[in-house]
Image (cartoon, rainbow, N blue to C red; front, side):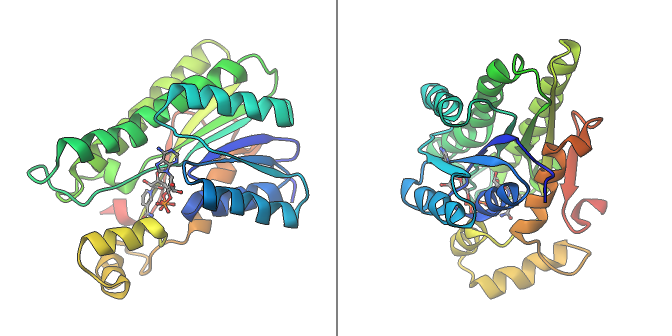
Length: 259
Ligand code: NAI
């Protein structure tokens, strides 16, 4: 119940999918949460629904993770509302099903802006306030099995998710070497049934049933993941239970990367 008691968290990409489920779990575990997403309609709705379960436990902020100024405003809103920041979950992401030949400048730049620059700006903005708040803090980034393995049809996506792992290690070392009380880790999900999976099926001209039947073969455990599977990994890495864990990428992938 209280694994995140008195912690204040920002979760990006929290209007739907994994981020939405993580926001609710974090509140159940005692945190107050800023749901940050560029999708204002679903983000505001999600924060409202969470507040019905636990009054004054969540707000929505219309964050564009690719924009430094937007990050500054999000942090300011967090401090004004809840007084501090302990946890950042860099969860927002986009994917395009394209090989190296098919990748356009537009999709390349969008993927880099959200998945890579967004994580960089998030880490940089959070460090600024976390390093002086005097309490244990944690940043969790979202990588992917596609950052650990190549996949010919996700060229830009794989590139950014591998970069997330590298940024995680570099930022973790920077915090440790400066004795800042901040741990930085990443989670690498296998395939999870979220709106992103539905969109991927659509881009591949498949029904969701066809998509699942094909994707499940990549996961030795015999099924795809649920958003909760990733939310619990975020929870562990964000909590003080993981106080000796920094700079690591935790694969939550049903055995995908064992092969
Ligand atoms: P989703 O598509 O359901 O949710 C992503 C959220 O990010 C959306 O609410 C969207 O509005 C938000 N977003 C996109 N661009 C943004 C921006 N510029 N600023 C702020 N918010 C923005 O995706 P899902 O599946 O929940 O993915 C969450 C994370 O998990 C992503 O980083 C994704 O790459 C990663 N992941 C997902 C996998 C899956 O199979 N679903 C597998 C491996 C990693």
